[in-house]
View (cartoon, one colour):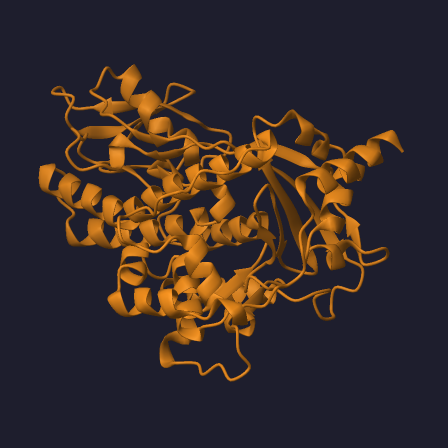
Length: 412
């Protein structure tokens, strides 16, 4: 999206130390033949604060832009019929007239609060709960100019999402990287991962992650941060069939939240923002027609990923809970009847370059699940992929091994 719509921003990121990652380096065969569209299989390794700083500078340089630092919007100005936005009211009481108001306040979706204060109608959100939490820590490589400490087996990351936890390295700019460890929210035994020693022990047991924090390889930049994943949400302000306030538009996470474990938020937000700008250029007249086009756009951009995230969050939550309780996990039906499960696709992708390419295009948000997974030819390749050729790879710790290691760190 940046290459198409803001190449100067992508250039600026690389000048500041961001790196482009060729995802095809993780393809399953040495004889991998890159088709023409594989130029899209590239990820940007950059810390979010750096990217946001560069975004800020790029917007500040645009004509007609003014920033109001330290100013918060506290409400909306509406027309007498309460059907159309006329501007905003700040926390200082300032009334700012506006033809459009864009809510880019992230998963908190402040526009819903503004609408309630204005006694305007609010529709119904779609909500899919998540049962996962994440522990993360930033590091800097002690030799930042060299090769990565280990292979990026996930293309843009290293690690895995296994049957009772996840551990993933996210490379970034200037030799920095983050390690994220995912666990069940309702699993008190893993709360100890908040402690640096326990977190390090878990990382060093995890395949593809351990190499990044071997002694002398990297220096921690932060403490361990713990977050509870927000639920998957499709906001009423971005859904067709709900009553909309004309001229008010939610974008990015304010329109739709998908589980951060799957890492799609920034990509979806950028796509939504650029396409919303196009829409407002093409349909500048505030009214019902403009609002209908805007919610259809939000539905097109976000709905497939909301549904996939709800399904995958439920699947991982159920699997991890079963492991925590010592029970056999229940089979998880596919998101759509007849569609192969993501687990089956991942197994086939380990030995079939065509399946791998489609799998990665879905993981990276380049194609929707329906566009890839519902293809009859793709499904045939998934079914016929030889299971005996799949590489075994390094074994992650069992739940008992993980708990023993992280508990021993506390006792030590």
